[in-house]
Image 1 (cartoon, rainbow, N blue to C red):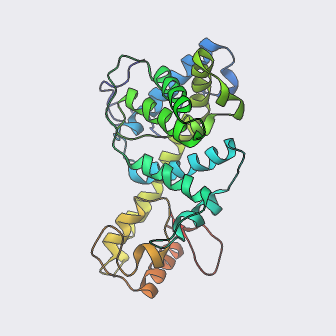
Image 2 (spheres, rainbow, N blue to C red):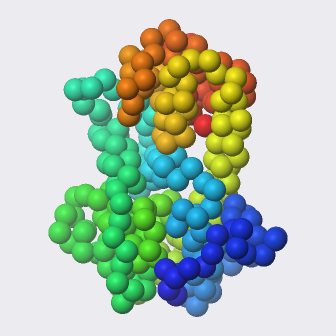
Length: 290
């Protein structure tokens, strides 16, 4: 199935189309035989395609960063070294410049870097699932000890074959540990089943983040801080941040300045307005995100 051609955005399709609502009949439990699994995987990718192409009104940088963290969590589980999202956010966001993260944090940072890379579109000569399976096998053969790298290679190959500008890790979130040793047609079938499991989840997450982003933008006129526009822009691009490191003394990616106290108060106010969540549950070293 080649979905690289223009399929239109959600505004171009029927009035009942919702980019954040995958068809209800795409369910993992119905992907029993190979033909069913491949058909449902194609349908799931077609439904997710407007999001993957950036045509839906989705904060794509934020979605990619959030899914990168979810992929890191899944990778570590597949490696037999489970780490929850809270621990991964600590490992990523409490590290000061020049410090080194722990191994789990290193996996998370690698996924975040992969999700930020702009991909070259595939040639269209290889079907998306076949391209993903081949990339995974090749990477495992070349670097047998690097499972996250092989998963990233598969995700990049899938996204490139679909013409997506960046990867959305819909394979990694759906793989089981027994899938990792498969090859050839069996691996391609495992890729199909993984997509059926996780592409609808990615679609729903895109919708959730789009709604949260709209609420955040709606409160912008209430914010008086000079650095507020830069801080809001950053919040719309990253899974989470710590005020003291990401917003102070300079908002990351900008020249806007904010004191440590002002950065904390800024995030606390947004949380009080109900447009920002505090993820850590701590009184200190708090981590905020949409």
